[in-house]
Amino acid sequence: MAGNVWVLAEQWRGQLSDVTFELLVLGRELATTVGGPLQAVLLGHQVTDLAGKLGAADAVLHVDHPSLAEPSPEAYCRVLAALIEERKPRVLLVPLTNVSSDVLGLLAARLRIPLVNFCRDVRSADGGLEARCLLYGGKMETAVAVAGSPAVLGILPGSRAGAGARVDGKPTVEAVTVPLPAESPVQFGKYIEPPAGDVDVTKQDMLVSVGRGIQTQDNIELAQELAVALGGVVSASRPVIDQGWLPLTRQIGKSGATVKPKLYVAAGISGAPEHVEGMKDSELIIAINTDPQAPIFTVAHYGIVGELVEVLPALTEAVKAKKG
Amino acid sequence: MVPDIVEELEVGPDGKSLDLEFQRPIVSERDEHALEQALLLKERCGGSVTTMALESADVDDVLFTALAKGSDRAVKVAGVETPPTTAEAAALLAPVLRGLLDQKQVDLIVTGCSAIDDLDGLLGPFLAERLGLPYLGIVTGVVVGADSGRATVLKEYAGGVHAEYGIALPAVLGVQAAEKPPRYVPVAKVRAVMKSGKIETVSAAAPDQASLLQVVRMTKPEAAGHAEMIEGSPEEIASKVTDILSARGLL
Image (tube, rainbow over all chains, first blue to last red; front, side, top):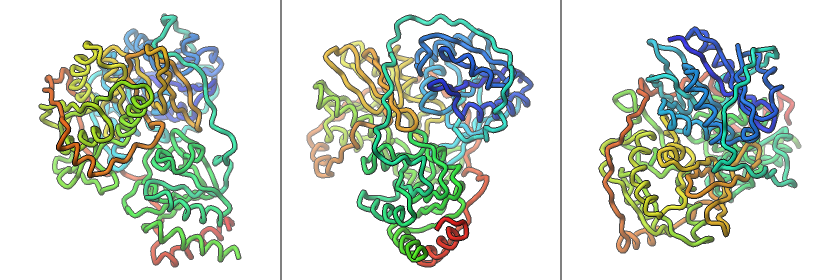
């Protein structure tokens, strides 16, 4: 089962995303086993210099067009569909991020090719591909055989350490022209930056982060008291933000901030991949959850099975007592 | 409908799927937000909201709840024999939506941008491609202005950054979060709607596409590591935690 392994090199606002390098590591593993080259696909406008940072790939296919200057699901899909139809790679790995995930479904549906979502691993098996995917918020892993080629795989951030692929070099860069219409039914307008004025959670040493398990808005006060005692602030996972209980500026994870504090207390957070992606590199992670099987315990250094309304106040008092 | 992941999940006897015997399915959280966004649009711009769902256990309750929340119509696509994959669901829903589009009854199709069991597809883009409509996902806000042929859509990126896009209507949107939390509707109101409201039923056409994936096995994830668990009373736990923090110079 030879064939090219492609990685969509995600660039956003002129920078390559960290996940790009993670996918290059995974892509190299796969390319080695299937016996084909690893190629990065770089889409954008006036970002040709980024190709030099993709030295972990054997080659870079680069499409430069004004319509690709900002994430555009339709333009990305048109370009990738044209490239795939012409060159028939074995597989395309796409980061499961807010920048790139839209194109996954469009591409698979347009070309009627297999799509595998929520992948954290893929290998060659029995002449085909077998992908391992985290479903149900990370609580179950499903192994799937992928019929047909090419296939498009959505890869969860954090599936590999990306450091090994941060190789500057001079991969062969092939500039490819794909015609795009001047008008698109979906047109980028402008970016809207997050409101200023709230604390910057990325600059905090101590974060007490609350999730669905906090249960009520009033209970956030318990986390707030612990955060104050520690000298930190409260942050949250998506469900708490969606309820409007804390502002978007406090969100940790895929759509929020990526943080690396000295201490991260995950209070009532189950540990879905979308959240773990934003806090897994914290220096010390202490998780509190009523579910002993919660995925958060696989990334935490210390775990506590218990009720937040009991554990948080006890922790606050103990921290205060220790600090005098 | 998806399993409630707050509950404990177990692998079924076939080793390839969830054990659903003791599972009560719930509406996918993103779909709750999609409905809320549709209702907010209706309140601001007029028009009507039709809630559509594939037949499954408890789906009537879900559709009556949607009516109680303010949906004008509820449509159940019946004849779904086994729980479909996402790709199959798109194949079942698309012909029904095509019929409504042909009657010019649809300006916007909103879905949740993803669901926790989306293994072989994503409903929004799959529908958009089948219907030949534009798509945008990870949406957190929609404005339909005086030019009813277009909408302005907010899409969420990382770090709290959003982007504004213009999109030609009709279109398909994958909603990440509605502009407001999904509204609560009292059970009494849902019960009242169950007596007075109506769910329209249409038959599903046979899906023209089977899943291109074959599930080999389902397991609980292998973890690279596991937390060292701290046990005891809340006070004992707190004492152990502060010892750990002190040893690391964090207190």
